Image 1 (cartoon, helix red, strand yellow):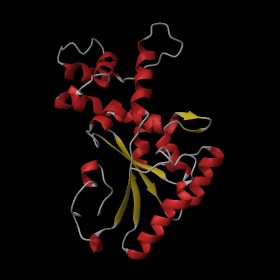
Image 2: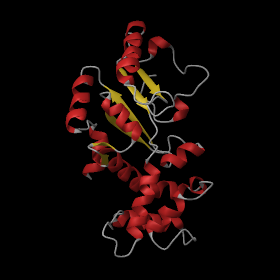
Image 3: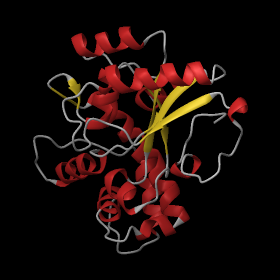
Image 4: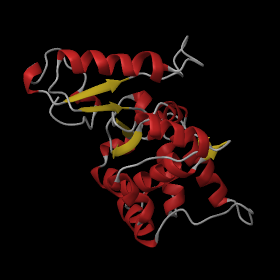
Length: 235
């Protein structure tokens, strides 16, 4: 590929969109230690680096190695936060939505039965069985900002025992990747919408920094990320 993929459609094709000699980017797709039979195996040592070496040898023009990865724990985490936010008097209650996000969600719901607050709208959208919200351009647009912002927080800040809470994020980070870019509505399949409302993420493997990044994450829980990704956190 010429650029880092932003949607599943860009990597699932029958015929390559460009010739090999034109490609400058290699994409890893659908690989993690959460797959059956791979649990506990450090694939960063045995597979990712091996693939990189082979690709670099056969296609020296490739200079970017990245993934297009799911975020399997995000929707469930989001639902738990929405539930806590709605609990009156909860010690864990927090303000999840900014005023402009609240207004956008209420405007997009158009007086429907989705809820009387932005939190209720998000809850009803994320728990809808058939993901009808994806057919509403207004809802898709209104959800983008809060869902992407909170997804960045989930990947960067939410941890378990000092490591990323999300299993796929933890896998790539412990193997030396950095978080590159969030992609809105990248996977519109039933599974993608159920896991993360269609959001996917690119992890970038910078060949000169893999070992240092892996060690910093393993020892300190430090997560490397791009300026594009950090903009969601720093807003």
